[in-house]
Amino acid sequence: MLTDLFANIDAGDLWEATYETFYMTILALIGTCIFGILLGLLLFLTTKDGIWQNKYINFIVAALVNVFRAIPFIILILLLFPFTDFLIGTIRGPNAALPALIIGSAPFYGRLVEIALKEVDKGVVEAAKAMGAKTGTIIFRVLLPESMPALVSGLTVTAIALIGYTAMAGVIGAGGLGNYAYYFGFQRRDFDVVFVCTIFIVVIVFIFQFIGDFITNKLDKR
Amino acid sequence: MISIEGLSKIFTADKQKLTAVDNLTLDIKDGEIFGVIGYSGAGKSTFVRLLNRLEEPTGGRVVIDKQEITSLNSRKLRLARQEIGMIFQHFNLLWSRTVKDNIAFPLEIAGIAKAEREQRVQELIDLVGLSGRENAYPSQLSGGQKQRVGIARALANRPKVLLCDEATSALDPETTNAILDLLVDINQKLGLTIILITHEMHVIRKICNQVAVMEKGKIVEQGDVLDVFLRPKQPVTRKFVQQVMGSSEEDDDLQLLMSTYKQGKIVRLHFIGETTNQALISQLAKKYAVDINILQGKITQTRAGAYGTLFVQMDGKAEEMNKAIQYITDETSVEVEVIRDAN
Image 1 (tube, each protein chain N blue to C red):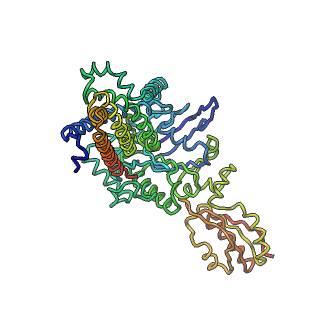
Image 2 (image 1 turned 90 degrees about the vertical axis):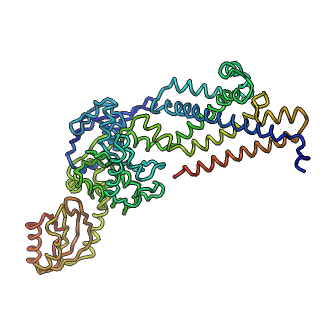
């Protein structure tokens, strides 16, 4: 009966598309996490009265972040085609989607990281300074651990945005569920495929949200 | 031990200059508990932050244990800070770390090996009375326990100086007393010099040897705690002394006393660090044929003895009464003032 309802679904294709969506999301998430934290730290530390207070660097980083956040993702992919081609050697497939995914979401996550760091009690940073801590110690043993729940919940939000981005990237040839839904569903007028892909994406979003919430709660000892 | 010369800090905000600490000169002796009292905005918090350069001084010198803090480069300053403990009003513990790991943090900063760190942490936990709470997170502790963690953390690298920035201001009176007792205890056990910032005079009364009163960035009065209690010179100091003694309504009360108690003498006894003669009133009653009625008063204990005022009504034969008064004057350090003679 189910096979009648979803007559056009090929289980092998569906699983491969799901795998590709996971693949893109997780690799892009790792990249976003690294670059986002770097950007967030840079924004936070160079701000006025920050540890590395520097008007110029702060201005440049903030401008870059704002510009990349302002570009709609679908256009960002197109803009980055030459860069992707140079970096990955192709503009098709899940790997080719990674640069655009990371560049598209790292600035967003960077802002979330900055907000998370601003929430860290200034008194605790002061206490660490009074103990004679180096800036590196303050970053890695105070700022990041103390903001960890916010960093993780920010990453969860970013991951869900990323899943949306992978679907968009799929439509222009990156693979994954978006690709499957568009080429095998929409273009062939097989809407059962579109429907199943939607359900799968929703389930993936739920899984990420659940894991994110679980980790956030585990980490938060406040 | 600590000498401060011409220390000042000027904040510039929106082209306006604010002098938080104004050309301050001070000497603090080894092993002393030195209190700095002032209202909020007097510059006392800035002052204590200048000592370990959490705020950069605009001018002046700070020398701690022969080391000129104000001339150190940033690397040497970090090392010097490891020998200056500091505790805070809001404790400033890392919520992401357990009690044990919070106390271990300064040891990690100082690069001490893990085994030694654990041993030292255990010693400190015992010292501040937190045994059994090693693995709790700060959020599971009461305010007093949090400050104990703060104190243990500040003592981890065996500092010579402990800076306390309003360390008891967020605590209830009972917990405040427990924390103050702990500070006195470590002051005596470890011979630590403590500099304590507060706006509460009873904190000064309870544990300090020396006190400085700050107002508008300057020290307006300074000296032995007892002296300052006894002879407050500045209006601001008098206000602080009244916090503890509550003597502002004394004059009104006096009129009432004299009209209510018409018999005998009314005498004011002024206790100024009396320690030898604790049972003064009962001794007088035993030695001389006088009746003594305590009317009102307030006696408080400082580290240098009892301080306060007591109003008593004394009745009996004039001769006996005079002998009794003579006895107080000669044998004790209590000052006597006959407010109204027997009629």
